[in-house]
Image (cartoon, rainbow, N blue to C red; front, side, top):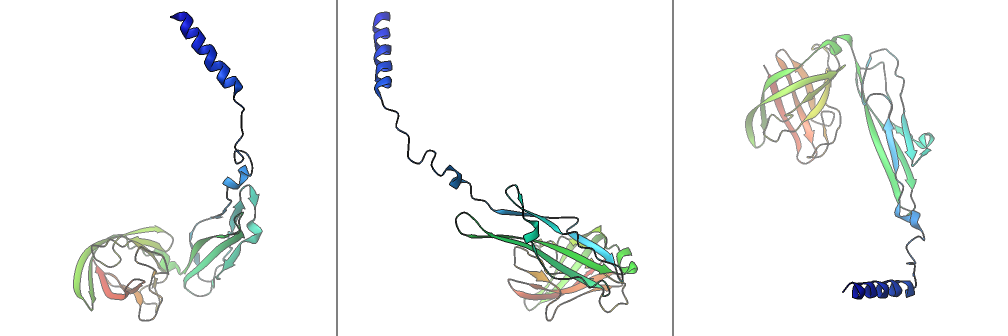
Length: 229
């Protein structure tokens, strides 16, 4: 039996040796085409910044790369900051290239800059609030949690005081007596853009909390929604 196995092994080896190694025409040719390059864009510094009214804004900029190549000089910045006027200012940093497939490949990063007074920066709305809302569909009530993050910035987990758990961010930029003291800047959510800067919207401090009417991209304006402790 061992001789039979030996003969079988020799036969297999001979068959393999007689086969011509044929290279697939696509095995190595244009190997680099499997790697499509897309740009990467990273903000320098913080995405959410706070500066004093009357202070100076120095843009930290952004770093853009294409593979190992630095293409930061191709970054386009849209928007500006007026450090003399309280408010929230948005800067969009964009980079766009044409990749190996001749597709337009682009990426954008957004920075939010709150220009706030000392009084506004000192306000901390961290806590749990009873949220009461009204709209054409009726009234509702839901508890919401607010957390101050840094500078003028805060997060809230229920921006509509409802069970949809819509989390957004906002800034307190001035004291209660100021005409403009809170801003919900334009931001993305699963329901579309959210803001308190469009027609028919507002955001303001109250003696025991705050309130707003905010725009939701999917459905229009919601509010007023009053948050009190």
